[in-house]
Length: 289
Image 1 (cartoon, one colour):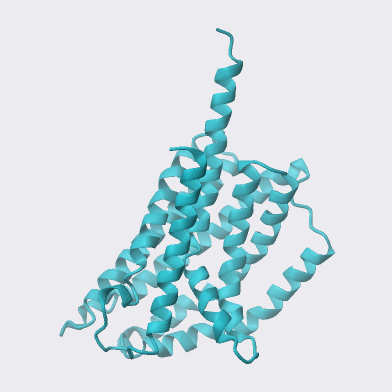
Image 2 (cartoon, helix red, strand yellow):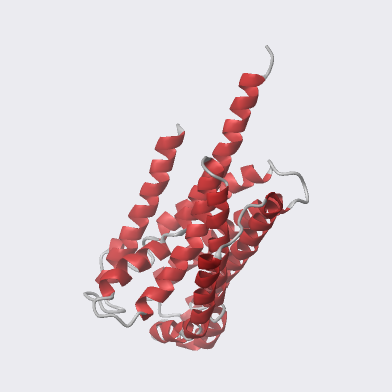
């Protein structure tokens, strides 16, 4: 498959997963928590799209990892991205299993929720470390230098962290009817999520700038996708907090884009793999007969 059809398929996967998440978000107003609903409108049904995205990420990240010399920051970054994708697959698998057992008489399925929260926490932490490793690998080349506007954006992100730290408790209250016995553990696991997402957003500013400095081509596109991941995830948290009338019309698409943002990592890894393919093709053309 050529580059453009593959990229179009990945962007389509992102769009479909986002629309699916938006539909489920809207359906919450028509199907109260605990009431039966069509399968495609169940909260964890769209996880199949995210599992596919992370499976593709795992495949390409592992292949790209082999391009970098051992014990280098670039190799470490792609390895961490691959492990993060594996953790995300486990996370969504656990969520799907937990959701399928909510109606069971035995409470034995409840621990699946904190396990999925732990897997998500690990995946986000690994991505944050990987983003830092990617930026530091290209920093010696003079890429990713920030201007005043970038530092203002970073300051704004840092300023929102105290407010975001209150979000897990609110989300946990919504889960109270599902897992009351495990609620404290879920809260403790989720407390760090906004901080990690804010860290990814800050790293995203560095990486978007690095992509701009890199010019054009798959490497620059990959950096932009990685950077957008952190910024989109951050926007999904911040937009609902904006005290503006009618913000719900922006909140729903922002939430959908944030939930589906794993596809942006998939796109970034695919762009990086295309750089390997193009380099091999160029080497083959220049090689003597």
